Length: 164
Image (cartoon, rainbow, N blue to C red; front, top):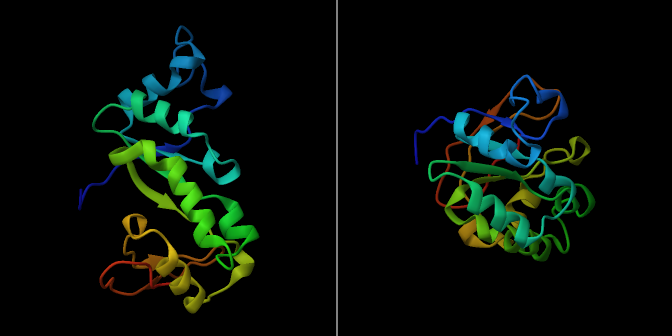
């Protein structure tokens, strides 16, 4: 939904939230349910470190209220190991296959690039062109790690074309 601003956190399972955010009487297995009653979105970092099973993403789908949206991080294997190069299109396909059960609950996939990759618009362009079209969305600004400057370019059509 264009124009929506959603506020959430990066994750929902933090032990030190027990008794602070989560009432003591809420079982850890019900923490997401409590979280989703308060926040309309969450960033999932788990998917950056491990490829979730489809049964896991299906469970995330089934437990989310209708208004809820996920922002899932793409696998570091694609960004940090393959560096969006050879084999990344197939790897992105595998990631997105695992995310498919989320359906409309998946608002965005976040692809965190390693700081040593540097600006490489042709690589980003090739990567976006080889990704499944249904999962590529235009974006127009990025702030490189350690930078206070944001590069912005108007989005045109589908696919990422900007790298800061």
